[in-house]
Image 1 (cartoon, helix red, strand yellow):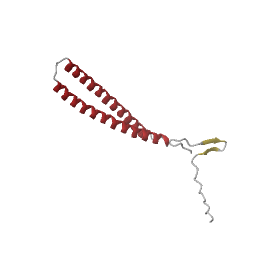
Image 2 (cartoon, one colour):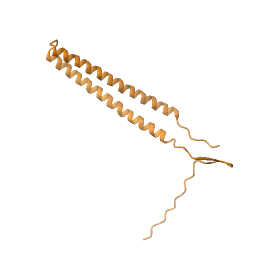
Image 3 (cartoon, rainbow, N blue to C red):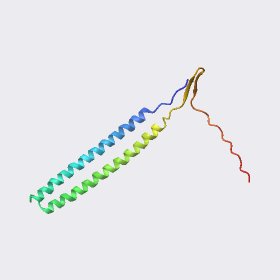
Image 4 (cartoon, rainbow, N blue to C red):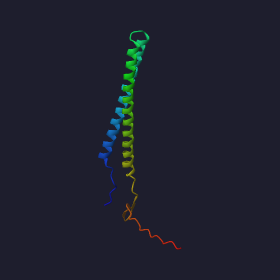
Length: 125
């Protein structure tokens, strides 16, 4: 009986879920970053209209920059993880190269062939 090799669907499913989760994490960090930028913009407007002091705005800017750097690092780390997961998925899919079979009157032929021994000739000097 001839059998085609099957994909490890459990491993593929796990990698797919991890990739989707990492994508959601990136999106969440980007939304968090946008919210932080919106908050700082409103702080800047409050300073412009004289509601808060310059010192208060400077402290807010420092805190915002630290938080932005943390979010950017988190996004970069998630992107690196996604690239690794995508490489693993490509590797798993690449192993699914179809094996050539042919149906004949005498049965199924093809499949894995034994590697032939290569005989190397010695070089003459």
